[in-house]
Image (cartoon, rainbow, N blue to C red; front, side, top):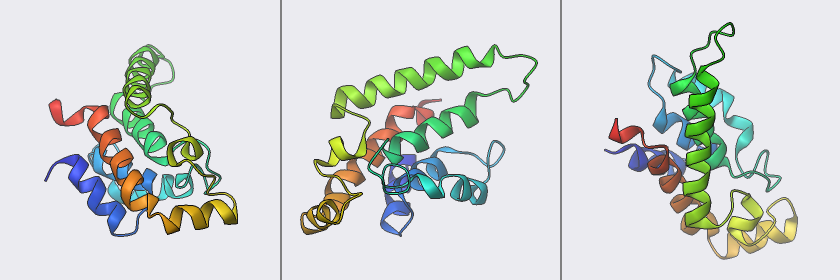
Length: 145
């Protein structure tokens, strides 16, 4: 199973978008599955369902940080790598979807009752979010290493 397929499976099992992407992208030596579920728990729905930054995007950026950070504060040179990988990811995602903001990606504001109903009536999480999740994982590029 590819990482993007794993992320989709996790999302369909009930995890939020950020949890699904982060858990599919991390390896236990960098961040355990359980820890990933915890740190990404508040980031679904555009950060606590506020329709802000897309959870798939934030999950992917956390995965990039987990993978490429040296975790040594005295040597900040790793930031160049992390920021470059993160910026590359954001550009790929934006070029494919036009935004990294949940309300723009979904075409509705799920932080409102009306927006939530709109999304549910149109099955947007099953149609659009699943694609954002798969694309985020693929754009991180860990399967190629």
